[in-house]
Image (cartoon, rainbow, N blue to C red; front, side, top):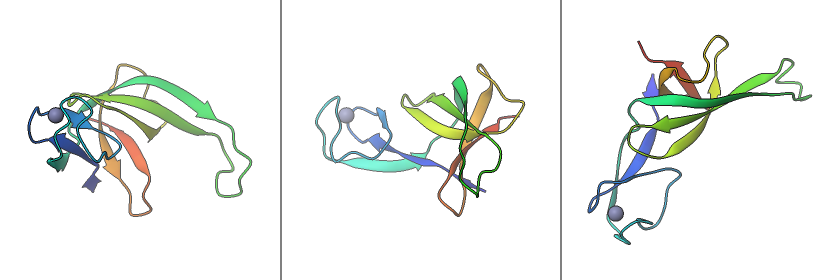
Length: 101
Ligand SMILES: [Zn+2]
């Protein structure tokens, strides 16, 4: 399992997602990467798509990381707003919110 990584400003410590060239808070150019860490589902919605590879609706969540940024991720059935999750990056590049036990 690969955890999603986000950028952390080396000067002020704010978490950034998606990647930036400089820190929007303090303007620092030195950013490093760290695992995204724990977050919580804020909203969940269902996308109805007709694409062949998604024959059933897929669920999308906005996840507020403890590090600060909000990340949009795929969501398993049975998980809703308020659930503590971690963000997993699949080999195909999709971000999934997994219930954090
Ligand atoms: Zn900064």
